[in-house]
Image 1 (cartoon, rainbow, N blue to C red):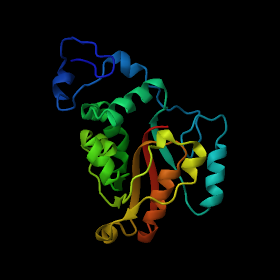
Image 2 (cartoon, rainbow, N blue to C red):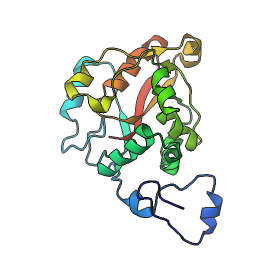
Image 3 (cartoon, helix red, strand yellow):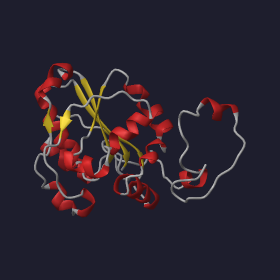
Image 4 (cartoon, helix red, strand yellow):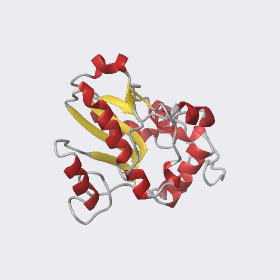
Amino acid sequence: MTCLLCCKRQTKELSISDFWLLHRKKVLCSYCLSRFVQVDKHVCRFCSKACAEKICSDCRKWQKLYPSYEFKNESLYFYNEVMEEFMQRYKFYGDYRLRFAFAKKFAGRLRKYKDWMIIPIPVSKERFFLRGFNQVEGLLLASNIRFCLALTKPYDRAYQSHKTREERLQEKQPFLLMEKRMNELYRKKILLVDDIYTTGRTLFHAYDALKKVWPKKVRTFTLAR
């Protein structure tokens, strides 16, 4: 295989486990994979941010705005230089092959949400047309995770990476809940999935859009924090 990040050709003899998992394509070499830093125990228990305290200052602010929301976000990796490079190639250069990079991790971590309705954060029609895919749906499809398309994003906005923290926090609600999904979601446990958790504003907007169906619980899961 040729690694899609470092572009180096990797050769090795296939083991029995390799043959068993051939349907999950390897797209990154072991060296590049080792550069991703997994979220450890020293994080905020609400949002997975690297934090010496049990709850970070960001979550203290969110709790004041959403006192009745039992918030919990889980992330696989910290956002570092190699994750930034991955996102650049996957989202902005549109290399859809990279959706397989974390398929095994995604599948393993989301196994405990079997009885939850898994909802990916949507992209606008304009962004979908430019990129050709929804990056979050791609990660879920590559991991063989069933999900429900329940939210829409009627209008586009500037890339989140181009905005300051203050600009992100002040954004208006971009999501709408599909009426045809309301009965299906009523009083269900819901897991919102996104690629990156930065300020939490996107995920809280999604939560606000889902209030109409009175979910039993809402949790969030992201690739990176």
